[in-house]
Image (tube, rainbow, N blue to C red; front, side, top):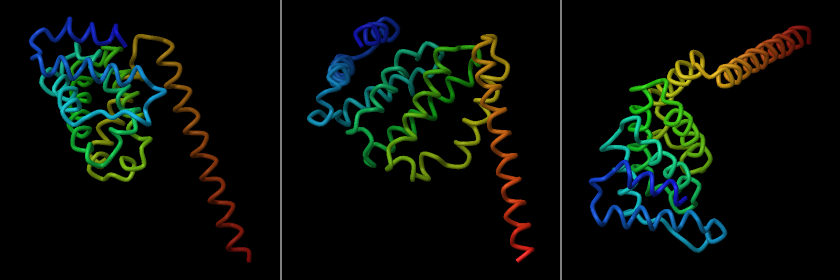
Length: 186
């Protein structure tokens, strides 16, 4: 955690004292994972984290995305009242990912952040956070990032997942045909 916050302060040199303090406090809360039930991340702290990516959505935002990824695991930021923060964060992170498809750190951390945001029940059901347009954009971006990636491990994993999805879809189609055939017989 200390490496992440120090990298943030190295990259974001124009942070004000309030934002600096908020980032240090969030880092302290995240470090105490055994105290998640007794700690909270405030809206002021979330605003500071959001500003890191919304005001500087470049490929250098990877430490901020990493901190946001870790913060997204904290139960206090998974409440509906934080939904607006996450919408802005996701849009900014996706924008940074689109700027440079080869920026492995931003892309991988961005997709991990998105996956973390799919866990809280309050967020999964949100049509605001997961609008059709936003989901389609993330899905298209995943295809672009992973399919043509220079890293062979990333390409292999993406190819294996696509093959697995295609096999699952083929099995589902076969199952649907079997059910339909059984219905027509009886």
